Amino acid sequence: MTHRIALVGTGSMGTLHARVLSGNDRVELTRVIDPREEAGRAVADRFGTKWTPELGSLSDVDAVVLASATEAHHELAQEILGQGKPLLVEKPVANSFELAEEIVWLSATKDVPLMCGLLERYNPAVMTALALVGEPVHLMAMRHGPYAPRIKTGVAWDLLVHDVDIAIQFFGGATPSRVTSGAGYFHPQSAAGAEDTIETVLSFPTGLATVSASRLGQKKVRSLVVSELDRMIEIDLLRRDVTIYRHISHDSVTEDGLGYRQQTVIEIPELVSAREPLATQLDRFVDLIEGKVDAAEERDSILPSHRVVADVLTQASLPA
Image (cartoon, rainbow, N blue to C red; front, side, top):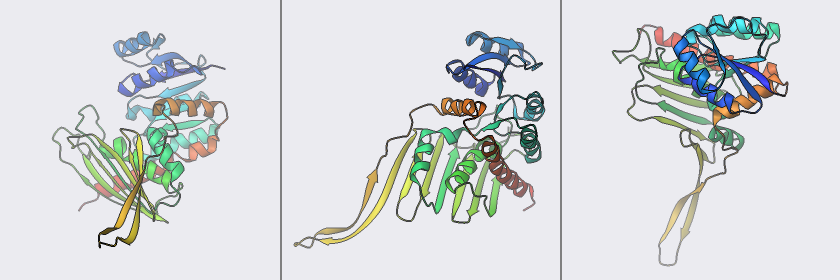
């Protein structure tokens, strides 16, 4: 069965979604929706579908991917869910925790599947590491990159939410018992109140996560290090590779007095998948539409990271 999908938003992320939707044989990109005719028609023509300026009736589609500007998510998501259509919404679900909570509540009330585009969950390196890690005690994440004037929100909703979500996944979905954070506001082109850097510490019942996000870097960095008591798992989210380090102590000495007392064993596991994260995410959304994924569990996995980011921003807004 082929599922008819509508795409809302034809910006940089929306265009990526259009490419992946048009290349998946489980779905049909039925139309793209964008109030900007030039942008909307360009994407529609490129991927062989039609353009409309507004949602209107969704009777011609089976589900919707929402990749519009974050500030439009709340109103559009309400309309889509109100018409009973399963929804994949780009992160964040809305530009405040309260509005995101409303959308998740509406999805649950109407029993309509909802998924959030927390894309790093589907990074093959993250998927591989999650399958390997058993008892993490410390996680360090860094998501830094150059300044992008087109992004109006601060780094908490744009960047930090990804690694907060990953940390929660590694610690078994547990809610952090404590969140502490500090933010910096430095770039003259940033909107008032939009943070440029943020440092956060999440305390879990069984460990600690430190998460750093910045848009003032001169190099794009997407790194993750997970420590267990007996090994360290290093994940490069850009190269999509995983390296495991295990320290072994020795007291070996040869007859001439030479020897060594320690060594590090390095393993490079095979990735569980080589697919593009956006394609893996789409497959999961189709599984959700078909009832192969528990809709309640998927819905429940959305708000924990949003709640943490909201707490982080509340702390950032407090006077020093």
